[in-house]
Length: 480
Ligand SMILES: Nc1ncnc2c1ncn2[C@@H]1O[C@H](COP(=O)(O)OP(=O)(O)OP(=O)(O)O)[C@@H](O)[C@H]1O
Image (cartoon, rainbow, N blue to C red; front, side, top):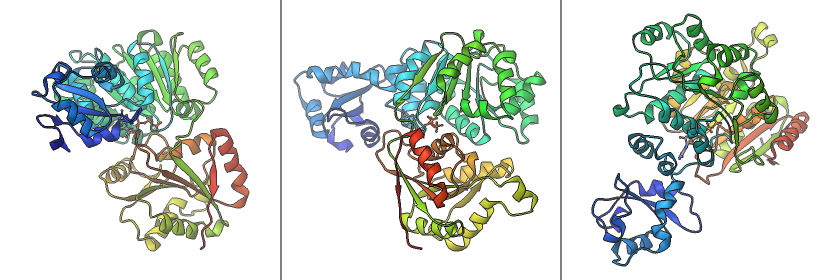
């Protein structure tokens, strides 16, 4: 493809074509060049990049070869730049970081980034409310990098997450964006035996960004190992989950009002689900979790569920479920899948039964040979095995992950094409987040599947979720 454009190097053209949604039958090409046709050279920005909107490659070639000036539409590509991440972030985020973001593949903003970044850069408090997999993480990270002062040795941004898994992932993206030139350190404070080492780190040289679970953070705050005097940005990710969790809510309230004040920081709340969001906004202001002029950025409110997901259900009796799942796996042959299993009840634990996750993994190990990577993720595993499970998955290849709801929030495994609810989730919100573990490539049209294995009595529960989340579930019939 690159040879089609003499004298001009196309940076990741295939990716750019893939990333840019064709609009009005035009594709966006990203060019990098020092010596190109004279009628284009004036349009290259300071970093020798040009984003050009043309119908196809041959037209692009014609424009590059032509000695005639560009049409108005082509010349307008400089303004079109406002629809790129670089354009939106110009003047707020350093060129180094934007180069890095482009290298990683973040070129065209997603809807939530397009809508939220101007609000975030205006330094107003914000509730980021957008579908699963819509790119909220990058939106708040770009804000953070626009605000922190690399010369100042103090914690300036704090991201609070509900699980270690989400924390590891956010830390990874934050570190990936930071270039060496920026000298920004990101600390993951995610409990599980590393806190001693972190204490010395915090004393020696405080990191500029901290990603933390609330329990570890509060431990450090109580001991005054971590100080928030220089805090500029506070992000609470999966905010509805945090406020709903009896274990986390009181610490969260303390963090929002006692350990730091909303007057001195910019506060961002993010989630794909904020039930009763008007009430929540009201509480934010009343309780002084945010300033009074907090903005609710609500992207695509009439469609809480990404439209790319196809939902199916399959009815069987309780004791047929393992076999039914096996038949499904054989007929779908998923590249990568997550199977959600309900948590073991206290009664079953007391009775000394094996957890349903273990039973299912054992069953699949002995009967399913469609996938070499069969992994488990659940609360009761220790920190290291949980971390190992996720990093193994991320190294590519196909996988089948058997997980409890611990993997339902925030976990980003973009290769996942199929979700199976071996047990139906307890609420519509849980259904939304489990489903959102697939369909996580923002500009892809690839269909992804969410399949529910239910007993007939559960059909009305699923119907309730369909009504609440406005999606349709189709019945699938499979012979055993
Ligand atoms: N501008 C972009 N261009 C291409 N890919 C992007 C862009 N922004 C985000 N992504 C990718 O989209 C995926 C989902 O992003 P992210 O994890 O931020 O979603 P989210 O909105 O936080 O979802 P959830 O609510 O499920 O946590 C990630 O793999 C991320 O790398």
